[in-house]
View: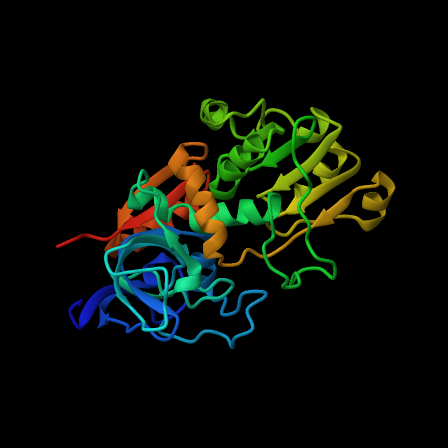
Length: 338
C-alpha cells in the first residue's frame, strides 16, 4: 500500500504556468468502481491549460463547476496499487493507462497516485512504455471517436445532431489539418489503418515526420493554402480551428464532411451552397475503446510521438512548452520512482 501522502501539482488560483504548484497532499482512496493507480507518466492536454487559465466547466460535463484547489490532468499510465471490492478485470500490479473522468476537470492526474474509474482504464500494451502510453488516451480517443466509432449515445454538447464518423477505406481521401499535433498524428495513422488516402497539413518542419507516419501528400501551410491546392476531399479533420477553418470547406467534394475538433468559423450559406456538412463532438473516457487502440499500439500499427518530457514537479515548464505551439505529438510528465 502507498504511503499516506504524495507529491501532486495543484492550482490554488487561475493564471499562467507559474500558478502550477508542486506540494504534498493526501493519497486518495479508491471508491466504488475505482482502482488506485501509482502513476508513472501523465499526458499533458489542452484542457489542462484551459483549467489553469480559468475555465471551470467542460462542455458535456453534467457535474458542477470544479473548485480550487484542484489537481489538473486526465491522461495517466501507471500500475494498479489497490482495487475496490466491486471491481473486476484489474488486479494489483497490472499496468494500465487511461483518460480519466472526461469530459470534466476531475481527473486529478498530475500526481503520484490517482483514484481512477475502472471503466476509464485499459491494460497498458506490454510493448509500449509508460511515457508513450500516457501520451495516447485523450488524443488517441479523440481521433478514434471522430473517425472510427463514437462509442456512446451522449448528445453532442456543440450541436443538435449526433456526430457520426464517415466510413473510411480505399477510395476515400482524408485531409488532416494540424497533422503533426497530438490528435492530428493519431488521425493520420488511423485513417491509413482504415485504408484511406491522407493529405497532411502542417508546417514544413514536420514533413519528414508525417511522411514516416504514412501521409500520401503533404501541404506546408506556410507556403500554400490547402483550399488552393487540393479538392475533392471526402473528409476534413481539422485539429486547428479558428478563423481560417471555413476555407477548408472548399477542399471538400459535394457530400463531403468537415469534422471540427476545435471551434471554427463557418458560413451556413456557403456550407449549404457547397453541399457539405460540418460536425463536432466531445471526446469521452472509454476504457474499451482504449483497449482497442492499445492493440494497435502494441502491434506497431499506430505509434505515439513524444514532443518532450518533463518531471511532474516541472509541470510549469511543460505548460510553457505547450504555449510555444508547433507541438509534434505529445508532451508528457514523468513521475520519479523511489
